[in-house]
Amino acid sequence: MSFSVCRVQWDIAEPLLRNVREKVFICEWRIPRQIEFDRQDRQAYHILICDDASQEPVATGRIVSSGEISRIAVLISHRKQSLDKVVLKGLLKVANELELDEIFIYSPLEHVDYFRSRDFYTAGAVFMEAGMPRQRMACPVNKADLFKSYLSH
Image (tube, rainbow, N blue to C red; front, side, top):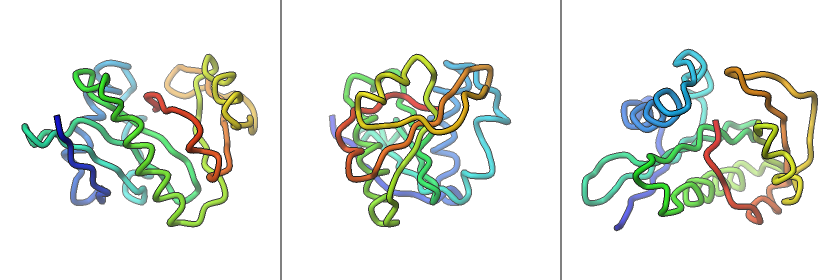
């Protein structure tokens, strides 16, 4: 299988980005729609992956200028192809272009040790998002390519 990877703007690619995120986060994870789609979407840099054969969107993720990486989503039918890593690679390229010193994610608590072992450090208090406890985890951009990604809200 072959895929096309593009950096896209929300205003142009919104239906395609929504398609993937609705299937993954709203249908699978049961994240409320009002939490899934927020004001950051319009300012974020988005990566979109489409299947070349079907022309259908299959994966996406975003990064905002503060360095927050989020909304990495891959359709269940394509998860064995490591497209989350391709999305992350695109987002890290954006982070480098923005000359960010560090990136951060809001990790589920059960993944905190995983990210600690990959040069992330905790920052701030644990908080609740969409009924799940989260911890802010940050990492210098120059070390971020050392970890493999995972589906991330």
